[in-house]
Image 1 (cartoon, rainbow, N blue to C red):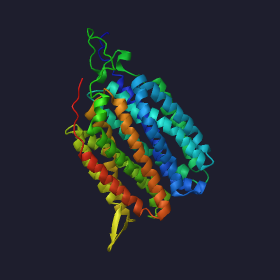
Image 2 (tube, rainbow, N blue to C red; image 1 turned 90 degrees about the vertical axis):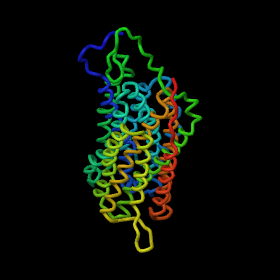
Image 3 (tube, rainbow, N blue to C red; image 1 turned 30 degrees about the horizontal axis):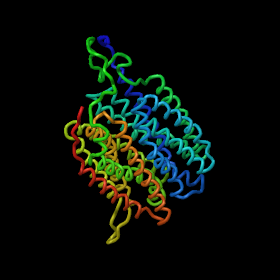
Image 4 (cartoon, rainbow, N blue to C red; image 1 turned 135 degrees about the vertical axis):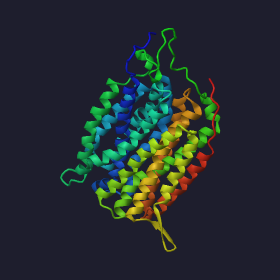
Length: 424
């Protein structure tokens, strides 16, 4: 292998930029835009909260089933080809989304999006970026996870004028995003991404490649063997804790727009503004706690973020004499978006970083596949259960109480995480 030419730009930054752009659209469009449109779906299809919640709820359920297999495929074939397949599936689903005439058709489309998210979402991007970065791995993965929240912040606001225009509506908004996805996510995944630095005679982080050094086999990686990881308590308390975190994420993110419009009495525009503020502060939380994780153990940072998430959930409640209810105070709702958003962003980032810190890269695809599986189960129940309980009880008081309890269970499990001794 020849030496890297002096002054040659490290191609990994192009890889990182492309992965960030792809993840911005995949998560933003598959999760956060549809959930912000739930009130519009209720109007269009004459549906209940529980019925519209099944769109993303079913997607999470199928993701849970598929995630472990995706991890195996990524470890077997590498992340790049798997990611491209997922992006193609999502591109087709997004193109068809504006033409859905029934909720059943939306369910079918979200089934397809589940395949796309598993193959072309977080798991493949994390493994691909881990091939290209070692010293900067925490930074680039933190940036990656921030793009999910950035999608939740920007995309609903961008299409809000179309969605709330009586002459246009949500179909035009989703159509505009679908065209953008093909141009800014699908095409770059084929034109820019490469599997390993060695493919273009570079090394991770752009480090010099010595001419006398043998080629590095990218499959020989440090870390814990999968069998040891599977038997460790750390894997399962992390899995349960992150599943509870995802229950909390999805319960709030999928229902808060409906709550803000129907119970707190906000206009669709104001509800969208508060909804997207969650993701704005989530971005801040991801950068803040990512920086903090460079100075202390990542599992310790995850304890802080989980406690903040619980505090955010509790800030939705208010006392009226001796009666506990949900707040409709605009100032308190704004406080909720700040605290919950910071905790959400930090916790989301720490799940991946604690996993890598605990188990290394040797079986990262399989380990993340398990984590993603149980995360998706948590997200599914968070979405479906809260929506169905709202339909049954007529209020979000009981559903959001359950969310706070689950957030507390998440914190308990995160407190039990201990380091796993890595091996070569």
